[in-house]
Length: 474
Ligand SMILES: [Fe+2]
Ligand SMILES: [Fe+2]
Image 1 (cartoon, rainbow, N blue to C red):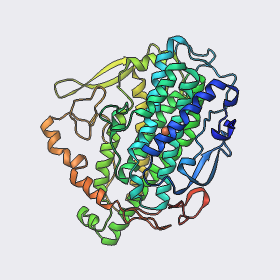
Image 2 (tube, helix red, strand yellow):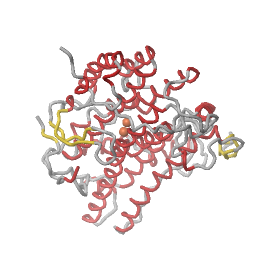
Image 3 (cartoon, rainbow, N blue to C red):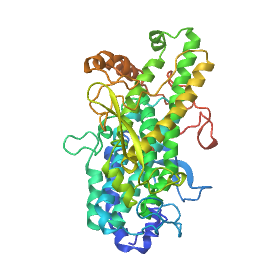
């Protein structure tokens, strides 16, 4: 029986016209589903979840909403519209036509970039697989699953590129994307952070705020790529990614709001009293910020990177919003980089701008994170409290780049290892902090009800009420 493939994999890439590609993806699809059932959200595969599904790339209406069981979600392949006149926006090939095929000399580099991006998508689903058991509300449970199915779709997006443009190697890489698993001893995910389980909801909101935002900046850089199918794929992924960060920043705002309410009710800022009332004290949230921000910064790579220079020169990976820059060649310019001097101090060196592309992207990211800190601090100030959130210095607790291995305080001043260890418990979540946060994680499944540590959202999804039954548990 002929399968109507248009029905099975929604797409806007005319999949039906390429028989062998169609067959290859047909072959991969059941393996993906097997992975989803084994490694995706636990226990909720038969629940009806109010999800949005991408149905086109039209800005006005690209998604449809409705209750679906997650294994029936229609993972599809969507690329932004092709711009026939698009030219390369930066690097040595500036202004030449973009590529519709992979140039031989960039084949392995592009494959590596796509595989690395692709690997993070299923990794995050695996990291979050147990969270559904402790969701603070049905609204949040639905948010988690929306993120999860879309990360699954992002995997599809990368697998499509591997299958369509990288032949046999690409198909093998697509298989391996399902064989590596987060935290697996033998076959871990490629990037370190993606091997840490996310077992509480404060961490989930931190992850969607900080780590998905790194994802956004990586996608923005790849959306500038001279390899046009990659650029168009990433452009559409960004549309979905925005919602993941929405879940992060609104989640953290709601946790803060609830804590402030409890502080008002109790008439105290005493962390112990706030904890006894079942909310998360602001200093503990700050420690989670210190932890997650510093680990997200590592994802941008080293401050000075010859790979980044190579990607830029070749047109493989640009700067986010490359068009906003005046000079797209970035030649004969330097970037002032502060590095440890090896004697407990700081020194500065000038490096070629092309080598500093990771740092340029990281700086834009830090600025965006700061906007939200300022916003939450306004809320705290209006509530009449003196506490303020802050981002630690981007030198703090780094494992990658020029500051890796150098201990600093939150301001980025180098300190001794002993001084760092002495302050560690004040700066980063302790076992006791984590145990406390974990103790709050109890599932709330009555529509409209929230766990005691988080305020309700201002509004529901897709103009529905907050107490709508976003997940019908089976
Ligand atoms: Fe993603
Ligand atoms: Fe995401």
